[in-house]
Amino acid sequence: MLTVLHGSDLHFGKPYKPEAGEAFLAAAHRAAPDLVVISGDLTQRAKVREYEQARAFLERLPEVPLVVTPGNHDVPLYRVFERIFTPFRNYRTYIRRELETVTRVDGAVVVSLNSAAPRRAIVNGRIDREQLEFAARAFEEAGPDDARILVAHHHLAPAPDYESDTFIPRAREVLNWCDRMGVEMILGGHLHRAYIGDSLDVYPGEEVDKGIVIVQSGTTTSHRGRARESAKNSFNVIRIARKHLEITHFMYFDDVGGFAPFSMHAFPRRDDLYFAEDPFQTGALILEDGEAGGGDSTGRVP
Ligand SMILES: [Fe+2]
Ligand SMILES: [Fe+2]
Image (cartoon, rainbow, N blue to C red; front, side, top):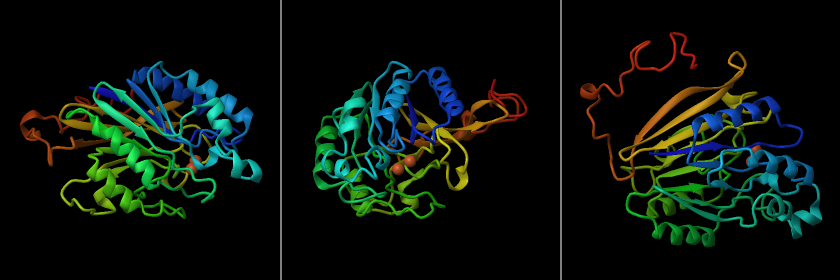
């Protein structure tokens, strides 16, 4: 079993919410992940002070491999000269030198692609062919049982109620590549609302029987939540088991003073079209009030 903690859109700077940040760090340590993914928009305006704070925050996460990727807010918006000539200078100085990364852990290969395109787009992103070829080379070396996970800030498949932002140009082409590369799950942010679903919900693709699991995190630590997560904060915990993936979407609740599990989603692994177990025999998918849920009768988790 591999546990991945996935947060996004920290937005250090004015939108940052310290109470959500502290609650996320506490939850991160309780989750005891094997890997942490932060899918972009670490800062609001890509300023040095914001990056210093973001870096200090990342250093307080559990000491496990960390996958980060830049978002559209991690390059300067108004400092035009810098935006054109050295857009990733602060990101590279404070967060990570590489904009594209490959992380191998026991049970997964995670490729992060930089979808922020400061010279071509203000808000929207881009993923080009060279980046996909980079990912393809990394995934070629994955073991047969390894989960192949792609991380990019911008969404490739929109949530059902997404607002004005359109998805990346040629997103469908990227999804087709992902399919051919055997990608099992795509992690992203940018929309500031969580969405856990299946690429087939929005795009049947070349392979109509089996989609790619889409895991979007809302903004984990900022005031910028949107759509159904307006003024809310969220993150995901992903558990990758031998036969299934389980994604728990956590949201911040004032009455809890922290994050609590809000919904759970399960999918069979990439090579299976359906779950092997018969839930009526194992009872695994049937939760009875007060018995299998793990919380008290209010649904609260201790
Ligand atoms: Fe964002
Ligand atoms: Fe963004």
